[in-house]
Image (cartoon, rainbow over all chains, first blue to last red; front, side):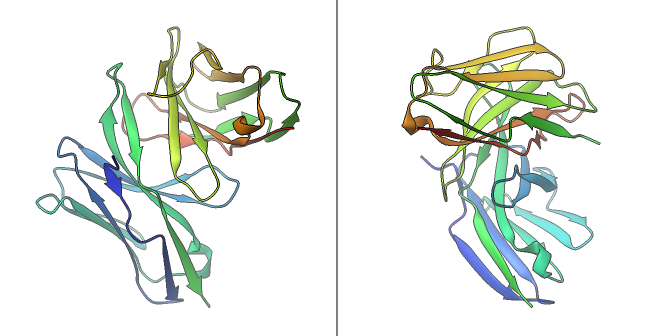
Length: 115
Length: 116
């Protein structure tokens, strides 16, 4: 049961253009959503987050949009740079059995930015 | 800020032996740390949530007797893979949560475990 879904396993864009990475979720109890970037053989790096009470959050080249009614969020990277090439994970914050917050992860989207 | 280290970065061990992986938050205190496992070309699988001074909470399907977690201080959690088998070979990643921002996690660089 995949509660957080990233339906595109890969995406390729040209340098300077916009990259749009999509994420869908099923659990309406999620209250925070996060995007992480991961290079091979490294731990994920936090990029940007959004609270469920907002519909947009912007940080430099990165903007996350949240559509609660559609249970959909997207990460926009403008302009895309070759160094952005990595796997991007969408994650949603929830609680585990011990009432601790945990992250539910999507399967990731591999972004390739071509020079 | 919010730096998390892991040691070792890679380890090779023989079947039947035990391996300990350390996770440290270097510049902040972390009441809660998390242990993940990642298989090639797959997502991060949460194994357990580690709370300082108490027993870890394991996710369904994770053997608590095989993957021993100890969180003895606010900056250190350890994962011990006991009686390792080749199928335990994987990339293990820890993360730590800064108590002031409960929904974010900061990740270590990961440990590549190979069991021969």
